[in-house]
Image (cartoon, rainbow, N blue to C red; front, side, top):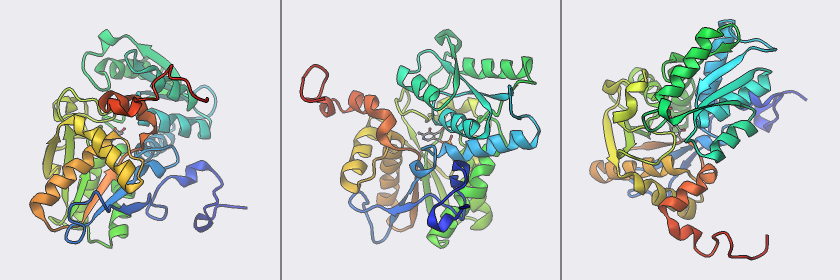
Length: 332
Ligand SMILES: Cc1ncc(COP(=O)(O)O)c(C=O)c1O
């Protein structure tokens, strides 16, 4: 049997990566949508990508670019990237499926759960002391260390560098944008998204400026400072991303980061969408814009689902753990 997308039979997991012909699904929001008639909202479910998040797109493009440049090959050559999150998982899985090594450089304060997930996905880990990583989010120290590997052992380790690599942006110009265009029949007026490396924001802004000039507002929803929404950066933390182009973002909506969790729970419980905290944050930002503008056609990028974040959910909504905390007994 060979690949047959309509029957969903694939020769390799890599063929499941999203594209205009194989888009991530879009689902209309119901109970959580403030004006469903005049301003319908559609959630683009990026957790249905093969390795579980929006970062599958960037990772695939980053690896393909290294392959094209002849920097990867079987055997001892591999990918080194400073990442403790979704990009690491996607890169590790793509590397595994392609026969490459993958080394993730992570600050030691990254929770054990995340380090283990990277190992489960097949990454080797280099843990960097926290002092090397002074800022919240992905530490600049890990970025410097990963660059060091690529400089000193360039024959062995190739650095995609998601924070600086245009391939991250291109992934969204060539896949996410055309998918949204096709799925909305060109009706989209607003895209609500969040900022990490800014690959998604910059890529979609470039695509829609070309496709529908002035017709699609790019609204970036950012968590308040000192946040606990993994994968995201407040604009004050964005200097590390060379892909952030402020003039491409039509509006920045800042949301109290604590709201990311109750909003994600609303999506889980009222829509059956098992969304992670960054999706909850995007929902809150979108609702505010809908209440102000009243008419439109919105697409919300939901980057990943809830499963990686149970500890974060409990930190912000402690009631979730009532009666199920360790030591309370009950059948295993
Ligand atoms: C959970 C989550 N949400 C949102 C983003 C933001 O995506 P981007 O890096 O394209 O800005 C990321 C990745 O960085 C992420 O891991």
